[in-house]
Image 1 (spheres, rainbow, N blue to C red):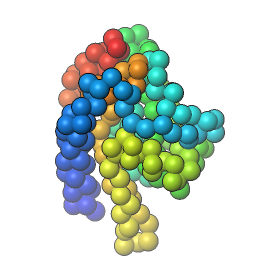
Image 2: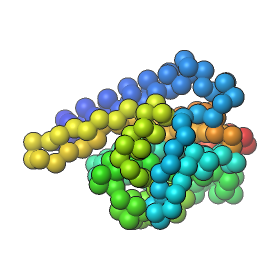
Image 3: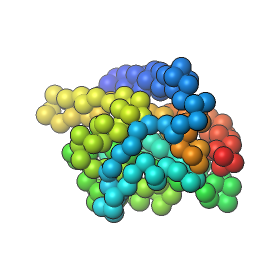
Image 4: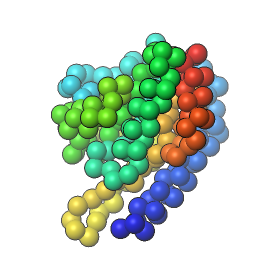
Amino acid sequence: MRAIIAGLVVVLAVVGAWLGYEIYRQGSGGSGEPYGVAFNLIDQDGEPISEQAFRGHPTAIFFGFTHCPEICPTTLYEMSTWFDTLGEDGKDIEAYFITIDPERDTPEILGGYVSSVTDRVRGITGDPDAVREMARGFNIYFKRIDMDDGDYTMDHTASVILLDSEGRFRKTIAFGEDTETAIQKLRDLAET
């Protein structure tokens, strides 16, 4: 099992690097257009949410799932720590945890998962096809991996995407990135 997890970490690091390169290559950061695609999903309280939630303030978004063994809970905890460290400097940054496993991650499950770590991050889920379309529109890699015991896990991009107040791509924070570097990226984001 450790070999599988280690392999997944390596794959996710490569995918994160690829995501950053693709965003850079496509020129999304300098196009002046909001990053990603329009979407209509629901938040952890069952309330409708769209891409407009990523406008009017800096935003940090992470795609993951509640059954994730390591990367998602670690990233959620790190995000909580980053915001605690930033204090007032990060008060305007909104953060979202978007599931890539909406079949299992209902609003209630997602809300309980996220709120058990921090109140600074909101969960987003919804119709499975709409969630997958949204994830693809944000250049997120995800794939269901069936396991021998009949269960499954999800392989996915492990970077936090940072958007400015107009929804434009600014940077990513890679899984396992140095804490001080991540916090500085968020400080820079807070000024956008």
